[in-house]
Length: 575
Image 1: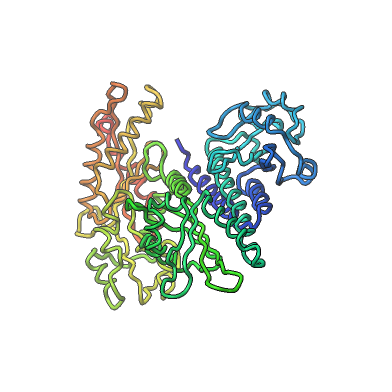
Image 2: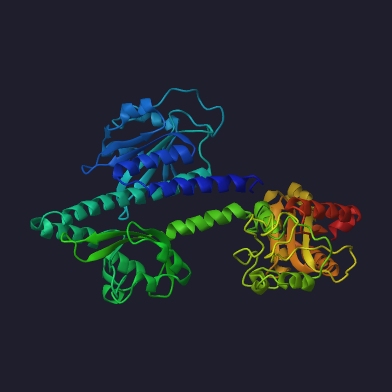
């Protein structure tokens, strides 16, 4: 199970990984790209040494770039290792989902082969996953066709340990992106050479055209030529087979369209903002079957030697897999790995988005709050139409976006526009969260925060083991999710603690919801044919503008413990 700090570590790693991957596409030449690859590993992935061994035309691998130690760089850069020695290394050791790890206990047989290497002696590891100076970790890079493009070699993790599952996945993803960047750098180099030849004297035009044609037609990623200027601006004149396969349309059909006809409606603004000369954009293009694929568009302008008609040459790279990985990583960073519920960080983010710093001086009903938003302050906030409580109605645990409660002054409404903290600006459309004054239902509707702590869970863990405990937590999460509305949020704080956010409830509604959820948890849970029972204690807190997310959660937590102590232990176990 994840610790509470792990999501933050993952988010930081994800941001750093995105940053260094973005740098790969900024290099202008193959040499710059190779150096950017190794610099990104040292800066962003936590290794002190990194090098790229690039496959030469004869099959051997040359150390093409090195980062982390000037002395080692001067010693081995430019040296060549035979393909046979590299093939031997890539079949030894342990296979880490595409990576190849050779521990020092096995790698001693490689000390005398012809692969360039540099290491220092060191003591034996003190614990199981400690990194040894003679440990070797390789990340092979493959081109689109599956042939070996090169090998990334890393050494000296800064934390002194062998990388865990998260570190391995980050290195594997980076190697995948590095292979794309190196292939694209080679492709761009070929295209630039072709373009230079097109601009030279007329006698070389035919040879240059043939070179360009081959580079265009046989490029591993999509390529297109479109008109520039005139009534037909942007119309596709020519497409290669890779682009036709990507979009599922024959070339004869694509010639009827422009990219603006194929782009996703939400991305049309991105396409229009992309400049024709040297422009770049990531957007979605429509396939023939009605689905959309994420692509990276990179544009350049082509003109003939006599300054005749100009054309737009567009390189279309399929980035669907990268986008899918980004979404998966973002989901893992914000959700509990065991139950799939939003985790503590995501809960605080959602709760904080509903709060602002200005407290409500007087209690107001939901209708009065909306009246205040209407009064001389423009249209109703979009959140009012997004669902009953500002959540999306089409799925659980998701907020309507863009966030209707955010002010331009801060990510969680830390100051309404047009006024300082505690002042109402002329366009203050924020619907303030208010809390009932007492536990008696007086008609006030607010954002209820139900803090749930399982009773008897520790004894299940101690008696039957963590496997049974995990199964209980998964089933409790399912029952809680089933027992709330689609717009409500069920999150796991950690351990056996859960939190439910339910907007638009009165005091009696919240009490009824707590009873329903407690009754849903009480029935026995069967694990491996064995019935086990847990109870639940609920504390009901209320989110109110002027409070922080931690204060709201602390208030609900305190009420939960008061409720737990008010019942006997046997009664708690029974629910």
